[in-house]
Every structure is written in structure tokens, then in C-alpha cells.
Image 1 (spheres, rainbow, N blue to C red):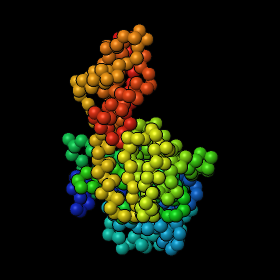
Image 2 (tube, rainbow, N blue to C red):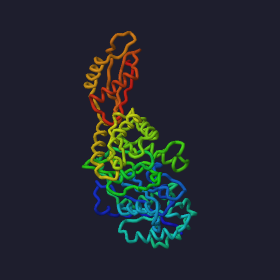
Image 3 (tube, one colour):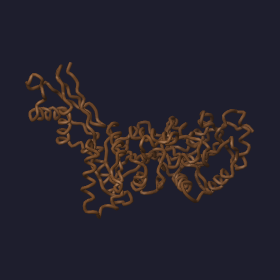
Image 4 (cartoon, rainbow, N blue to C red):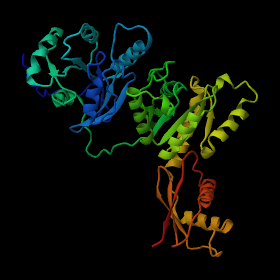
Length: 456
């Protein structure tokens, strides 16, 4: 049976949505039907991990998309298994059901090659009571010869099915155009908003997802005692006291020798990319186990990427009654992270809401320092005072005065120090200037880069 090309029906935008709202389009379906492949296809990049193994996607992955001048939030979900009631499958089901509840539009993906599955029928029956626009896409229909595979799915009683190939892009535009009229148009003069991005990083099972859920105020991501529960970096829009930001929960970073090839390797790559595109990293340490060598390596990755940082010592509720615990742990942090003396430290528990009163103000102050630009005039006044207090060493033993400094970038703050030909600036002197910059201008929680350039 040949499927007709869907017509662009003139429909009114979704009720209750203004042009300033971003509609949510949720992708749902049973495991391994191609939801993440479709998500990546619409997004235009490989954002969700794709693998033949069931249950790869566990959390709700969200990404902002624009199609023909209309903006929407696309949500990828874990495979929906209505019959599951235990373990990880049950947690994934809860996340998928939450996505259905939040969404304005639903896209149900089914596997055309596998045919109609009893689980597909149960999902369709479940959605009959959901009063939201729902579009059924039959995936893996790669060629016109595969059109007869659609016949099986008409048993669902749907007037229109959308044959697509998420892998090759066939039919995807037809599906997007079908729900395009439901999306509000964006004003032409509206500039895209840029939100601060905060990545939550650390070893497996230190409480990253627990903190994200606490900050969001609900079970936004799957939390389990099983290490490696989080696989994809999960971006979540959040607002605290009028300050919006994008929060990213990442997969735990294990020692290189313990990383298994395949999905875990992909997860690590995605975590490092998420860290690189973030402004600030919240590095979570285990307050009971203490800081480890792997924690030091993760901190080194944050510093190498030039990200702002906040250290949260989690599970501190289990140690706060020990009189010497704080002094001992602080000494351990000083030993493990001598290069992170400028990073603020928070001791608390991701299970207690009081932790938010410490974290959000720190995010705001570190972001301000991360984006701060010092006027050139003030910088050179600062430099002259620093040279008076500690002259730059010279081979000729004469004071070097022909020096100029300017800030060339933010995020992180980056300075260019211009010196005369033949003048060498030792690393120890650059460290002295960095410490003086922090004393003078703050820069709490953010790395500082000083580049030495010769004057022309």
C-alpha cells in the first residue's frame, strides 16, 4: 500500500502557547526503534548515543531546534516498556512518561522492518487518552519497495502514517512539515538568548544526577546506585530567582584503563564535549571516600579546557559530626588540587535542598568572574604597581619598563603581555602576575591565561 505524501494542513498554533514560548516535541516509542537516530537527524548532529543494544538512552535528552523559522524543544526519551516494573527499565519508563506529560506534541516512532509489535499497540492504546497532537512515524522505510511494510501498522486505526528513514533522512521533512503549523512563528527581530552553561562532572556514583534533580526540583534524570547509569549528557533549562541557565548532567569519568569500548567510550567523548561547551563545571567529590587520583585528573581536564569551576564535596551529612573532618578534608584538597586554590569549595549533601542556597550564588559569582573584562587603563596601572613591587628580571640587571598589558578575551579571562624584543618572562613571574590579578580583580573560580607577545 503506497503512502500518499502528507499535505500541509493549515492549523492554529497550540493552545496556550505564545510566540515567546518554545513548544516541546517528545519522541517516544519502544526500545531500539530509532528514536535517537531520528533525534540526531532533526538536530543535524550526533548528540544522542546510538547503538543496537537496548536501553542505551535512559534520561530525557533535550535540544533546541529551528525548522523553517519555527523554534521547538526536541526531547529524546528512553525506550518505553509499559510492562516493566523493576530495575533500570522502570526508571527509564518514568522518564518517558514524564516527557509525555510535559510535551506539547508527540512523535511516536515504530520499526517498519520489525512490523507491528504488541508493545507498539500498548503504547498506541495508552496515548488514546492523551489529548495532544500525536504523529506516528514508521521508521526504517528506506525505499519505495519497503512501502508494503506499512500495511501492518494501519491496524492501529490511524488516518495518517509517516514512512521515514531516520538514518538516511527520507520522509523526515514531511513529518516536520506536518506539525509545523502547530508551532508559533518567531519574531524576525528576536535575538537568540545565550544562557550560561553549567556541567556537573565527577567520577561515577558521586551524586551528579542527584544534584541535578535537586536543582531542578524533580526527577529530571535517572538516579541509580549502578555506576554508569547516565550515558548521554543531559541538558536541562533551569531558572533560579530569575536567573536562567542550562544545566548538563554528564556520565561519570572513570580511569582510562577501566573504560570499556563501545557505549562507555562514546559516553566519555560526549562528556568531554559537554565540558568543553560549558562555562562552568561543578566538580563533585565523595565526602566519605575522599579525593582520589581520578578526581585530580578530572580537575586537570577542567583546567585544560579553561572552564570556571566549583567544587562540591557531596555526602558531607555523613561526616559533618566528626570534629576533625573539615580540617582533614581541606588539607587533602590542598594536597590534591594545588592548582585549584582559586576554586570555591562547598561542603554539603545533594539530598538536602539547603545545598541550593550555596550553589546558585556561587554559580552567579563564578560566571561573573568568567565573563569579566578589565579596562586597559586599569590593567596598566595594575602592571606598573606590580613592576614596582617586583621588577621583571633582566639579563642586563636594568629595570624593564617597556611593558604593556591588555585583555584580549573572556571565558576564560585572557591577557596579552607585550614585551620588548629579547625580553624573557619566566613562568614564576607569570604566576606572580596571575596572583596579583586575583588580589586586585577577584576572578574567583575562573582560570586566567597570560600570553607573552613581543612588541613589533
